[in-house]
Length: 165
Image 1 (tube, helix red, strand yellow):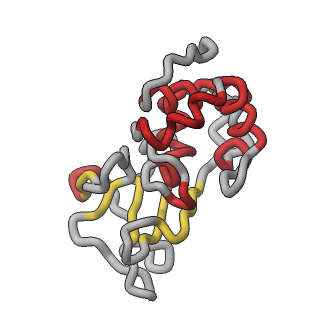
Image 2: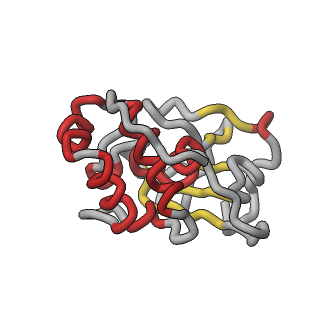
Image 3: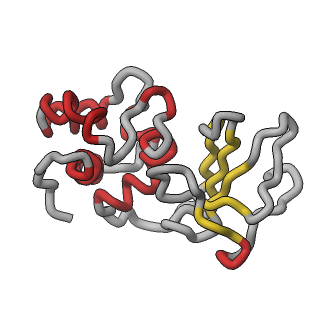
């Protein structure tokens, strides 16, 4: 927890979350609670190039708040669609937070996929409804967003071709 500094220091202290379709973050073996009785979830330093990732889960198991702390790591290195999805998209698209379609849920994605790759990419770049522009990460390039859109939509049955890395 940020208030007492008890982040796990290595993967042996962690276990993979059992949340459906949630590719990370990780839960400590004994889940500490925030001051309101909600469990914390973490990513450890260096996991997916993010030094720290913290979310507080509500009683329904969905994140109430997400904090990502990062440090300047030098020049921008283009990320794959999967890397972007894991770093910027799964907080919502891994849980259905704010009615976002869960990655891999073909029924939830069907109408969105029908809009086409260009429309989905534009919506991801600009933001739509409760989804922030660029998944909340202004450092992501248009091509990284386009690769993430293709990766996520293809997991739900699309056959989009992402831009080369």
